[in-house]
Image 1 (cartoon, protein in one colour):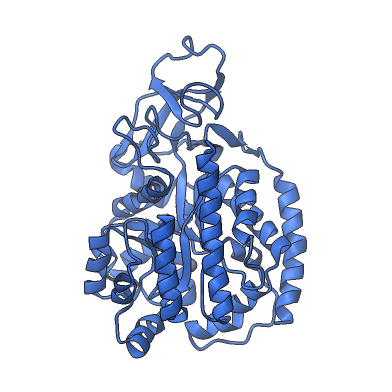
Image 2: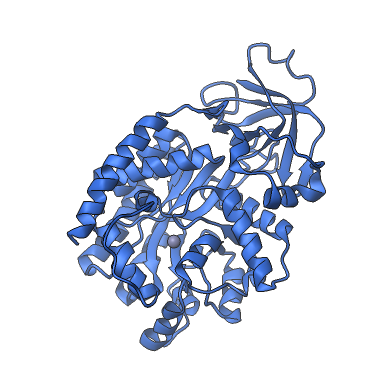
Length: 451
Ligand SMILES: [Zn+2]
């Protein structure tokens, strides 16, 4: 057990900062509620004399990244001859599809470990991944799962099924998603509580034909998971859908029965008002990735405030969600949109709803809730080393996130009641992960030159 003593608790939704209080957590295997917050209040030290005592200034829920690609962790500073691209489709062809074909399982393991470590050190306790690696599909999600477990963070995995490497590749993608969902179901049936769950992944509208779309819809139904897909990241995807299939993207995926409250749509930059309304009616999430959209010059999502369930993702940029939050807020200000940082704080918090919908919805007592510092909620927490030059109160948390609080203030990170970072020291082998990643990065870049 751990007791955080005299910490001010930052709640993101609704925004609030508490008076100094104590928060008691338990690791799995101890106490009645494994991996959860077991009590909050004042002067709890006497009640839990055996608990490890930790002090600090501010304690908040862990941050959630609702869309990323861990396979891109080894693309940082990429030194490969990449032909210039005229548009997004060419960027995929010249860079990303060469990179994902070059991934083998050792490269995948190294990139997943590096990405998970980066997240943990940034105070990100849950990461939603969207994986591609067409030359090493079978078993790939279990390799990523091992990386999550080695670092000790939570998440949601999927394989991004696509037709672009032929129909056998597409079938292998669906198969891997289903295999992994069953792996998790088996563990849960055996009484285990896995840190990760599986979604059903698909690359994008323009690389998923009718046969594959049908197979994905079947997989969504039988696995009771949601689809995780890129839709309308670039205008080409929206135009191609109408040209080849005579239908808007969302209408096409909805008609197949793919959309529901567990669905995560990445980007959605070029969706229409009618498509936004359909996603809202299905309760689906829209993962906004401001930095990636800017980097790929795919345009700005002007309809963002119309979506009910916007969550924030990094799309493979650095795992730092506070950085992502800032880019989302500033790019929106630049676009002249109506949202303020507080609206993006709600989006950041909403990533917890993704985790709840997969890992089990909270019951009335708060048991199983994500993103809440209350008894019964999951013990995924960040202890901040933050001494602000202005008052920090409920009404200005978003302002502190936009203009001050950064990942350099992350002191300790707890997931499932256990420290993954403590007093700025990672509990995992960060040096080993980084040196292995550098070696595999050189091999990945060489393999890309061959493709
Ligand atoms: Zn993406």
